[in-house]
Image (cartoon, rainbow, N blue to C red):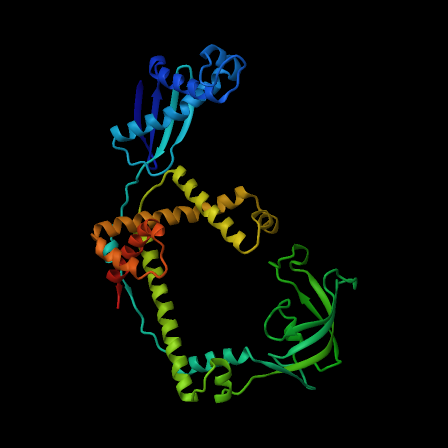
Length: 414
């Protein structure tokens, strides 16, 4: 057997293998024996079909392909072990010839990772403050969940809920399809209409009618309306203003389920806001640190590994969609993209994910961050309702998570 291994750019190796006829003979014999058990040939018992008869029924190519199915993994395992190759993804195998059997194997190997200057990376934690205005805003948001509407006879203000009839016309006065509606609900100021539309309604009264011109945005989602000038005719049918409930003990009991003095309730809201802001600050700091580590990580990856990451991302995407009741085909129709378009879009993100993952591992190794068995077992015991069969699966993820936590603790300055 002739084996040649050479290094390629972008963390790949090429393995060229040529079998002699004698070396491949045992694989052919095993493949023929296996196939003879599966095919039914009159006059012969399964597993006892002569080679020439088998070839005449299934063809030599099928026997060779079956032999390669077992020979390729065996040879690759042997070469990878002998050459001490750190293969990190499924290799790509090209069969160059079947007589003699010649293979070209392209295998992604662990890349060289440089993280120069990582030890100078720091993120400083900002002090979290919750002021009275933050508490007031939080309470206002709660009040909005219990809002009621009262009809009024006055000019329209921002925040009012109104019902209108409107029609759109082109510059020549012809009606435009898709620009008409009756008793259309609008909350003025929420900017759900074309930019400028709601501003033209301010001050109008119930029953009043008005004409005004608008130019649609250049990036409007419907191409036929991009930068288009449209004349609108609007009639106001109803105006309602918002009424928010008072924040008193009765209201507090309604939303919390227990009687609480207002001062105490505000303290509870403040504590909740502080906890939330600290959590958001922690996430923000961790994300900043990851971005800085990404900036100092220099490496190259095999296209095979990047494609494998894209495949995983695509699988995640399809799985997430199915949980939300949306099929991947529906998504493609909605976005007017092909699966190949999606794969190309994911390429940069896949490369970023790989760079960060390998960079973090390199940094954690340099920092000698290790997790002991005792620490892992203690964390596992803290996980509620964990089944024994799930422990092995979760163990590896848990170790990575705990190492990352320790890395954050070292580089995020409290």
